[in-house]
Image (cartoon, rainbow, N blue to C red; front, side):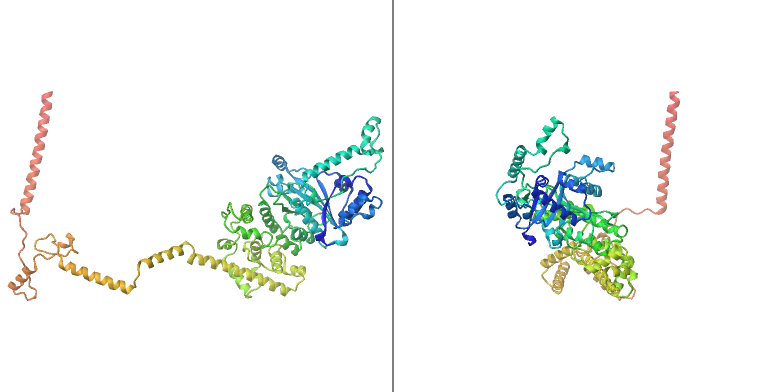
Amino acid sequence: PAPAECELYHVNRDALFSYHRLSESFLQKLWSLYTSAHYKNTPNDLQMLSDAPAHNVFVLLGPTAESSSNNNNKNNSNEGDQLPDILAIVQTSLEGKLSRKTIQAQLARGHRSAGDLIPWTMSQQFGDNNFAQLSGARVVRVAVHPAVQGMGYGSRAMELLYRYYNGEMIDLSGGDASESDEEEENNSSSSDEDDETPSESEPEEAAKSKALIHREALKPRKKLPPLLLPLSALPTPRLDWLGTSFGLTPALHNFWQQKVGMTLLYLRQTANELTGEHSAIMIRALPRRSGWDDAWLPAFGVDARRRIGRLLGCAFRHMDVSLAVNLMGDVTGGFGAWMKNGGDKEDEIDDVGNNEVNMDKHALREVKKRSGTQSTKLTSSELHYHLTPHDLQRLELYSRNLCDHHLVSDLIPSLSQLYFTSRMGPNFRLSSVQAALLCGMGLQFKSVEELTSELGLPINQVLAMFNKAVKKMSLAFNQILVDEESEGLLGGDAIKEAESKMQRIQDLVGQTLEEDAAEGAVEAMEALKRGNETHADSGVTGTRMTPEISDPEIMKYALKGTDEEWADAIKKKNFSGNGETVQIKSKQVRSSKKRKSGEELMESILNDEKNRLGKQDKGGKKKSSKKKSRK
């Protein structure tokens, strides 16, 4: 059948291990599929499948499974022949819901309890005690029938399982999940009471007769719960994430990342001794069922990608370059949605609006807290921290084929870090071959010859693709510098303020420069005419001055007398201008007192000084006579 027509059913383990003929046949089919799908199966796995309380088993069956199961209930003669074929099996384990005190106490001592693989590992790796408080389901095994592998049945099973844990399964019959749970409990309790098999009725008799347990006779039950139940008839547990742990291979990583949509959060540095594979943990959030903020997933994902990128040169150096570039992820896919919706500003989150966009912005803010990046776009200051102007010049020379690739080999790690940490912006992207070359040479420190053998390409084609990648990044770097320089010259608040000032000037001045100069000349001539008509007294008798010259310091040097007086003096003198002088009488009133000569002045000063000294001597004699009289 087509994968879209198949449905996922929950297997009741009480009915599966009830020693019924139909259940035994179904268990044999199930375990044979387990054995063919995995290299390692032990009796402990069967025991865990039977009685582990946190484990659940789901099977993917064709569209005729429900009708065949109804026929099996009616006709018990050919039960084994009418069992539906199992296309895929999914075994899950519920984990999480650990208290913070337990986590802190265990991690402080460097220990952790058995079980809860993903919560303990995430809490230890990321130092976040809140993650262990979340509840989730870990996919223990996914087994697909060998005849139908690679046809999409495993992806269909995981899609239905995700929808079930996310609360998207709806019971079309109209029944409530809680009612079905009560009916199931009542049926199981009534069947326990009515069941007369020796395995359940014998304990009381065995206590009396002191019979041994191994002497009990195992017989099938008369009343059994349904072996298979559709997911719509089951109550959905409230979970926050769906994850898995597996040995990393290119095929499995492609399945869990591309088909299931999970994110790689952990990769163990030491490989398995038997398989040589590194253990990986991948998780997908359940947004509809989660009561917590889902921003932790992209934050952990970016942090894990940064860690893996730094370890590709040491612990993961011998990893195939195709797998390594897939681990680093698609720089514009995966988290590209919240990168575009989030923007570059932290305070753009609104309380109202598109919830998805606001969620992406909040996720971006959590990423910035954990990764330490201030923006999703590279700035010129950060670019100069990684590459100097001389380094940029070398990149430009190599992009123009003016030098060998050895001249820029020391710059490849910086270019790889900038590209695979999404610092080049969401719109910048290299081809798959160019990204693989950048990852292999810059992060894994492999030579061109090693990459040529791994990719299966000729060396001239490898160098050509590498040159194109470096040229594209060099052009992007130059564009970043040009944009920031243009913003400093023509953009920002300065250009807005200049435009506003020019607009105000245009509103005030509505004439040309020539018109303004002509108007100023007319005003100046009018002011000059008014100054000639009006005069003001300078404070000196017989002089005149214009209102523009009113400074007394300047007027000390003004010629005294009126124009008529000077004209009369010139006529009387017959002034010819050959070194002759002309004078007029001053009208200033002189004081009647005569000035004393220098000798008289000195004599008066000496007399005054003698008089002062004589007065001082008389005062001293009076004081001495008073003292003698007192004695």
